[in-house]
Length: 137
Image (cartoon, rainbow, N blue to C red; front, side):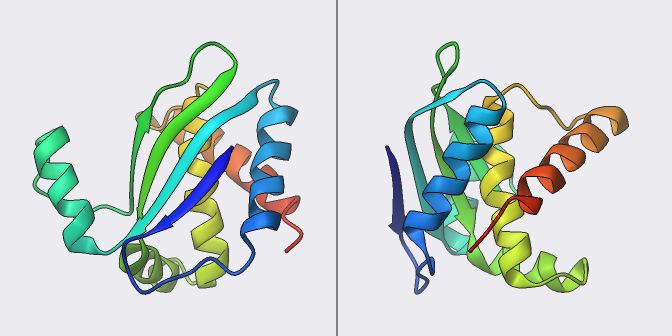
């Protein structure tokens, strides 16, 4: 089950289509969706979580809490809508593209993809791009 929750003035355009896309991407990787909760919020909301749970006093676009067991993907993914908008401008892409990149980024972490080293970042980016190519909203 995939749930979309809103703690800010934002609503995802096509929850059903986005859910199907996430499920397709996970299944392509040999995983199954268990319980995924997306929480769309603002910078202050996410910053508070970052400080309280991760002891990072910085702004970020996404924080994910992974409850995956084996091949069953589960977790809570918090996304700062203002950060996504700023990053879309920074990287010269549409808000929609950047939003979906962040949406799938959290799931890819649950599937074992990492982004600490340059090689890991490239592999993560390649997988994000592969998933984005299948997005049909």
